Length: 54
Image (cartoon, rainbow, N blue to C red; front, side, top):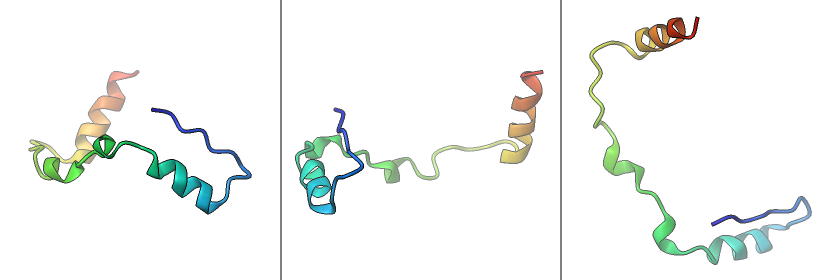
């Protein structure tokens, strides 16, 4: 679902638009916290990925 906000929108109209969203569209990111196990440091992984672009 797409909501278009205009520059002239005030806080009440934005809250009204956000209230019209279905409640099932909320994403619960907390259930994925700590699930990714890394074998290297994030910096090392990032440097490896950037070297692949060359």
